[in-house]
Length: 337
Image (tube, rainbow, N blue to C red; front, side, top):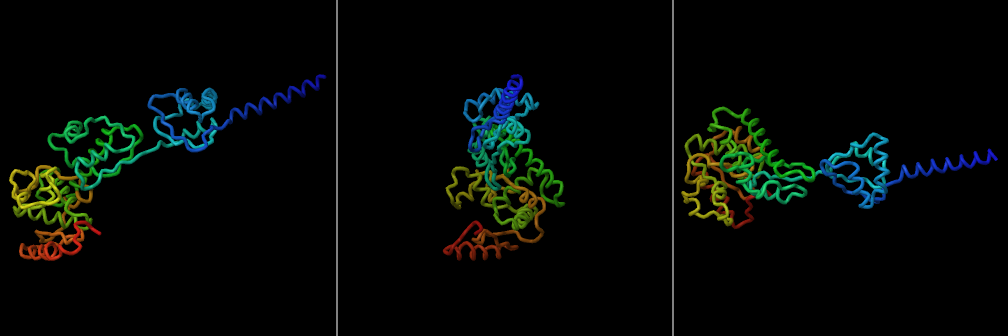
């Protein structure tokens, strides 16, 4: 009788252990990746209850017990995560020890204006917009910039997590621009016509707008630097267009070039315009501070995105006739093919 009872107890014990192991290793019910959000300051207990209510976690109580047993009560970090399908409780907890949050990207494009960069930030997925309204004026106030903040955000692709603040990206871009400008300024050529780094930033923005051909940036910068050194006006269309703002309709007219009320009209003013006109990348900064040597004082768009450089006005006028009058009836392009 005792042997029978002992055998029954053994069987029950085996069954209990088996059931315990089955319950302990009970897999989650999600059959595909589950995207979850762990809020800052939230606990494992509160998240487990939420996951159970959502339906993919079998038991919040069991997960709490497992976390306590494994010493992983504080394993969760704020962020958005893609949880793999079918993990059991211990596997889930251990997965969180090395899991990386989901990230998003927003790109501030070289050669675009600040308002375009702000539009990209407004449209960015999962950013928390903490600067409202998001305008050049509010950005200037946030960064403590006196005057127009144009050109002070560094163009690049910025990686962020869900819920990150717009102000965080703006501050990163501002710090990056200050850092890149300082590095380029430290490596500048001697005898350049810039008194302060900000003037180089203005020049870099003009270079960025004038050409989409990387190899031409130092050449373009060289032309503008020599014109400044000789006391010549820059006479560059992108500055005029920037100063026109919403009045620009796609074409520059003679009256626009004669407009002395436009402070960015480099056909009328001497020297640099008052501020940058676009977001300049590192290559444009390097070009502005290390321009190509030479004698060219003019250039004209050839229609394929590149430019023809001239030393004399006579040569320049011939190039204008060749590329912008004679060739206009053909397949003229202002950007590279």
